[in-house]
Image 1 (cartoon, rainbow, N blue to C red):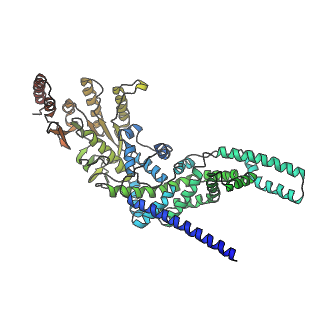
Image 2 (cartoon, one colour):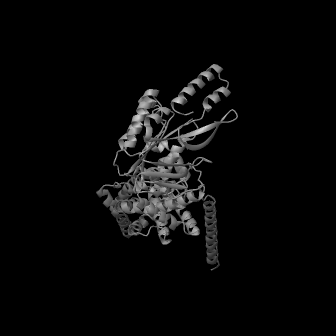
Image 3 (cartoon, rainbow, N blue to C red):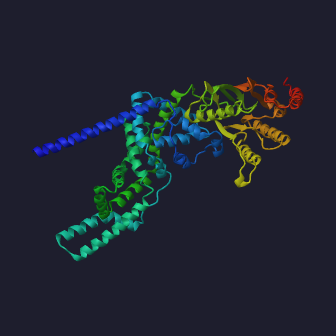
Length: 556
């Protein structure tokens, strides 16, 4: 009795220590969750894995060129406040969508409000979602994106299914009566089983990261459903019930993954021989993969439902940490865009600007380098994306029809394909022309920075005028920056002209980064040259020519 009592005491102490350790760990995680709320998360993000879900989707998304032009990965890093890998992947996919329906945005807004209604419950949900923060969870989309191939042919599959019974039968027959034939057959089976066991390990390498994570996905989804945070739809409920049928085989695989992580452990050697004799590991993988194939759609539904909860929490964190934001209003007339106090979320102390345009008149923006014109047109495109994907705009007011976004900003020479700067830009704009068609169900937002700057002035202005007129005729919303004042004269009433200006301070230019209606009228360029000590002959000639050109464009 004393010995038994001592064992019980030891077990209780161990359980208490483990409980306290787990509780302490959870408290630390909760403290970290609270501390980072409303702030960008600094982390090394593996975009090749984050994009895995996006890569497996066939929907209509913005082009790679537009994503690069707008530094969409940088924007994602700012928005990514998710706690799980599925949430991260889902947010990344949504951010790359070209246009979203109002039905989607209404459902998203309802979920944001529902998930964030109770702060304590939301924090517990974040803690639970962090169970899916292992990098192996990035591989979950690989399970439901396509039908999984069988691991073994039907004959071998049948043998694996019978192997446990055959092995046990031979062992029992040898115990009852020592028989050399039974011994030889058992020995042959063991040798065959060793080969099949290790063949299975090679065949299932691609599943060892994802299948254990599928069990965790189920557990997280089940917890969220119990707390009424998961979407209360028949599809989600049915999917949760169907994925539950994988629990037994997945639990075995998960347990073995933990044991296999330490091959020096004695338990590893014991379980490894036990699995070889009965072919348990191949058998469990066969069951799991068959059921994965049976419930592909359910796994995807559950994955997306869990991910949407995580994204809804992340969006609220972004909103509460923003300088200010608004919920966008999407119009049905398809003719006007109205943005009040727009700013770029990635630029510290960004100066806000407002603009109102329609698709009957484009926006031509002039200004010197570093004055803010490229930042402004990028901010316009980025706000169109976040408005349509996370129902949030970094502005005090945003009203627009849904927009298909096209850009041509970051052009460069492509030496590998022998393309000049102008060829690369011309191809980029040609792609936009092909996509922008009158009568398209979604309006186009076209953003072009320094149009055709890679060729000579006469042909640049002529080609730019023709292209920009084409966009307006096809009812596109157009923002284009340029240094060519001739364009404003040639485009006439088709384009409204705006400018970013600067003033001359003490030996330096001072930018206010505010957009103003009309052509650029400052006279600071030559003044800068004069203060830098350029020869008087250059300054005099430049001033004379400047007076003539200002008279031509009525800028005096």
